[in-house]
Amino acid sequence: MSEIKKDHSIGAGTGAVAGAITGAALGAAAGPIGSVVGAVAGGIVGAKAGDSIAEAVNPTDYTEHFEREYRSAGHPDGAHDWRDYGPAYTYGYTSYAQHRERGFDDAEADLERDWPQSRGESRIDWTGARDAVRDGWRHIDRRREDAGR
Image (cartoon, rainbow, N blue to C red):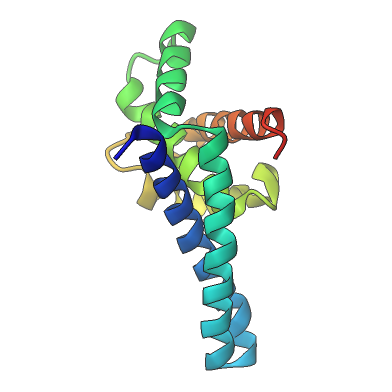
């Protein structure tokens, strides 16, 4: 599978899952059938949104960009390294499709709440991860704007 095709599949899949969860939650107000209809509709819309994100930002390029940025900035905190910050940038990418309509500032409380389950082996708390996650979001926003999406 080509790198571009794989990236679109990841983007569409991530968006579909996020959309299905959101759609099911919204449809639940109409009962069980509403949940099912909401999940299907949300999955379709989410897949489209995820695919457009994948078109604007290649996850491999995204990670390489932020690793270069991290290394060139030089961080005075010697207790943490890229292995700690990399997951925060990844979290910025993977959470973007689910929350982008609200924007980072409006979604921050949810992002902070979910950081402990999303951080993997990172040793930084939300306070340390916040700027990296926000930078990741802004990078995707700029790329999508440049692409006219």
